[in-house]
Image (cartoon, rainbow, N blue to C red):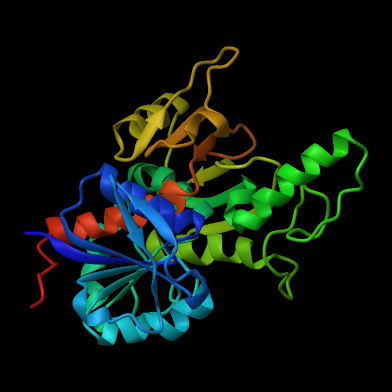
Length: 341
């Protein structure tokens, strides 16, 4: 059994990763359609050993596809997601627009796979925020073992999380500084080259940014509403790969050795934790990998039952495209996908 699949936003970073991962993982596809805005109509994108020409979303017939993977931003998802769903396609959306909708499941397959069956309410499934996705993959097995009370997380998020223009800005600023060009921020509020910016998304009334709020709200929705979580989200001059420093307080006793072994056995995780120079994973090493990496597992002596660790993942993969494809695989494996006439 094979399916017709549309990638909406096929010319973007995440859209191209979706196409690459669908081919790499050999998801059963009968026909794949690249869909984008009118200005990208006819532009060519790669899908395995094939080349696809982008079609205009305003003229595309969603009734001919079984699955529509959206990675074109919230405004496109808001307008076209329900239209695609009404036409019969199962929509898997990477934007933030549907994440907190109570009738739309927010899914990370390693964390809450059973929730995927709830898609029938609106024919839409939401992908979580990139920083949340890698975090909850690590938190889930620990929560099952010792019950999490509180999480404090600081993120070190790459510029690719803001798109291609942000990556270009880091590249141009870095080159420019060496020839004494004054860096001019456009994608970011301040210079990003050789700098860090403690500000991702808009500020909210309580002083947190929306990115930080997303991590809290999405973790509660997918994992446990009783978990208390506070986040500080920081943009760093890294092209691809998000990192997180995580401190967790548990209700039950747990040692660092126990936590490390639990994480080693969990799906989607790789533990690289040698207490020596280089015995940990950094963003450069995770690029292109499917796994979420955990390092620096240790006891946090400042609280009872506390564990601290480091999490790294390719944000364009597990944080976005890979998770969407894994949702497709989950639907297929659970026989929730049917080929439409």
